[in-house]
View (spheres, rainbow, N blue to C red):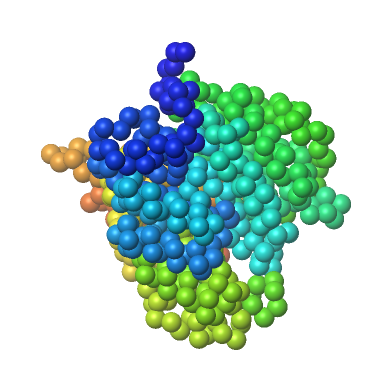
Length: 522
């Protein structure tokens, strides 16, 4: 069979799940000796070749809806200490990554993950990825229902399922009953959000969202979905994607393109042909977007218990510190933690009377409960430290920028979200930021330097909208001055309590373009 898409050729030759049988053999080879098809198939084991491509990898571990026990967190910390240079990264899908491992390391890592109920199976690859959800599921005073059993059912159904191990591209699913769009519904391939019909709690669903170079907001399906039908709808959507999704051009293989071409009515009909008739109507339960941030000490729905949300600068946590958080979760609570899709951490089930003693621990001076309005709301991708696509460093550059803005605008009073992504893949979601930066490199004068394109005013939740793009590239040397000018103009224009994206929405984008023009590379 002839293939224009090499990834489809590799999957036709051997299913990605077969890589587990070959792992011990591959671990004995030099990286340059491994067939490129097998390097790709390693993703089905959650193992991804990192930069530079010299035989070092990351291993990504699925944490559906961000749930992790203290015992599991300690194993992750041990593995990161032994193999990952003592550092763990939280991803924007609530998973965790350990970098700098070898395939020989993986032979020890994977069984130790499995022994404590963790899995890296299909954490990467053309498969259903880790399920994004409400990190407060089960303890959320505002949730419409507890989504943990639903997430677990969908997760277990797809995990290592050969019926869905060869999709055209990745499939990202979100399931949340939090009214503040904790699951970032509109940018997922398939998302379930809280809804009511005749007083009964269930879900509405959106399909066909995604970012990268061609962002699409997911479109709303007409159904009211009872909790027991979530898996049916997810299976139907995955089947539609598998059987009818595009496979010719790699950049055009995401579900969003199929949904856009078919139209939402045709997509709904194809899903219902598989599930049987589904009810219509109901009212979506939604409030303002909270950006996936859960900082500080807050009451749980269980009387007398609180959760404690903390900030991980750059989405990184030292292995020894994760182990310490696990100890705190056991000492003061019930040994439970959660990761968030804002790359942060939550300790749950803490008796309210113990919260003051817990939060007095020295570790919270390094991982604050109340971070700044810039540093606590900034997001970045991995950047060129490990990623094969990003030409620039991102994490420390963004941290430096955010700290500079906090010094400049100490009285801003509201979060201002700056996201920096290292390439057009948009892993740091610049389209959702107040100020979205996409990095690259270009010749400015006689030097090749980091440069950035800008987009302004993105947000999710009610009336979701992508950020508006500005023209031109900003050299790194001008970045802080340019961002400073944008923020100052926002402060000059804003009304009481008005967010950055609200000001952008009511002003002409040309005003903001004129502001950045003096800072552009000539």
